[in-house]
Structures are given as C-alpha cells and as structure tokens.
Image 1 (tube, rainbow, N blue to C red):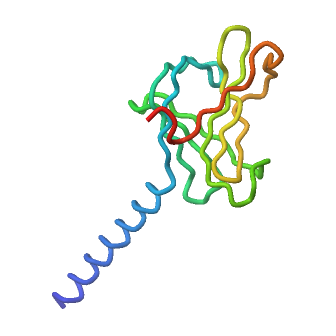
Image 2: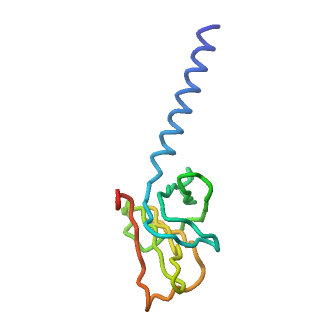
Length: 132
C-alpha cells in the first residue's frame, strides 16, 4: 500500500513538473525601450513577458512586476507557417507609441483597434532577443 501511495505522489509531481516546463517553454522576454499605450493604459519602458496560452489560442503580455497584464486571442497571421518569432509591433497615435499587434510564431493578435498615423511614424517591431 505504501508503494502505491508513493508512486501516486511521485507521478503527480512528474505531471506538475512537465506542465510547468511546457508552459515556461511558451514564453519570451522582450525589452521595450519606450513608454507605450495598450487599451488606454500607459505601460512604462521595461521588460515584458509574452506568453502563449497552453491551448495556443491566446497570448498574454505582462510587465516584470505583474501589475500590467493583457490577453488577446491569436489568429492566423501573415508570418510564414513555420515562423517561431515573438514580436510586439507598435504604431503611433500622435506622439504616443501604441501596441498594435503581438505575433507569436505564425499567429498574430490584434492589440489595438484604432488606426495609427503610419505616414508620420513607421511601425516599430521588437522581437525576442533584441536588446538583451
């Protein structure tokens, strides 16, 4: 009986470890060097984690303190089907940077529904690994 209980506890620990490992494998860290807006909220320059949900249908960004968290639904996007990039793309609303899309691999989430003034300000892309 002790062996059955010990095996059950060990199996639970292994399952939890595998679940944590698979979740952490779906995250990327990006450094944003400027203040930006998301959904009407101001986000300071800093390090942000971009994480795809376990079901791969959603993407979440959060600051390093965990005080700012945003989640969107991922959709098929323009990237190549095998693309593995994690990218935050920013446009401008006047003098303010605005997060427009979040790319996670070949999927993209639209983070902002407005139109940026791209004629004055080109889109800025920040990919995982930049600024490290």
